[in-house]
Amino acid sequence: MRIILLGAPGAGKGTQAQFLMNKFGIPQISTGDMLRAAIKAGTELGKKAKEVMDAGQLVSDELIIGLVKERIAQDDCKGGFLLDGFPRTIPQADAMKENGIDVDYVIEFDVPDQVIVDRMGGRRVHPASGRVYHVVYNPPQVEGKDNETGEDLVIRPDDEEATVRKRLGIYHEQTKPLVDYYQAEASAGNCTYLTLDGTQAVDAVSATLAEKLG
Ligand code: AP5
Image: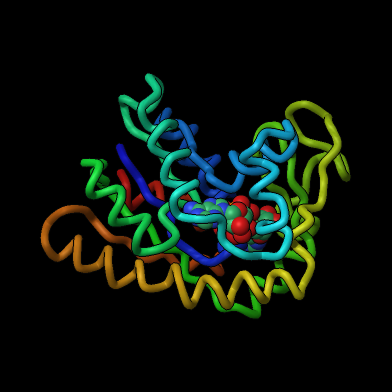
């Protein structure tokens, strides 16, 4: 099972990635989480990515493509993978094709911009695992703590409203064209394309996914 999750920042990709990883036993490849881990570790990649990410811009295609190619080549991806946050531009999607990386499903989360802006203010994350919460819509069992480890949850630096709006602009400009790209791929029989109403409650979105993916 090779899946791409497509959608605006805050559309719920990371939240449903947790559900799909458990359901299908495939690893989540979140380019955002990989970059944040590199920043935390102070690597060369992290140094290059930090300023760009904090400003809500995209990291260069070249850097990201190298990172994902390396990750997909690892053993745990042999039985499938879940791409969360990649591809995000047409050149990234083309690079996948050129490298013979096929996908079975492309799943688009459709959520209006204003809902996204409202959501991001309440997002809390557990950086070590990638688990995502929301203070109202998906609260942790104990306020401010991860359900499984009890460790502190944090607010992402790029969740400030002005940065979220900038990220949404970049999404419409550079990532949204992938909707047409993958719908054309689906018409050519190269994958299945699904669009989900991402404004439903978290559990309802998971239930729809379970039903559509079987
Ligand atoms: P990344 O970490 O990938 O961020 P993103 O795509 O902007 O997506 P998010 O993680 O912000 O949102 P999400 O859709 O996963 O939503 P979530 O489930 O958390 O990328 C960060 C940065 O890294 C980029 O800006 C860029 O600089 C760089 N980068 C990464 N990949 C790159 C690439 N390929 N190329 C170039 N640069 C790249 O949900 C959001 C909130 O809503 C949470 O609080 C959640 O609890 C809540 N929620 C989720 N679902 C629901 C629901 N159904 N109802 C109510 N609340 C919900």
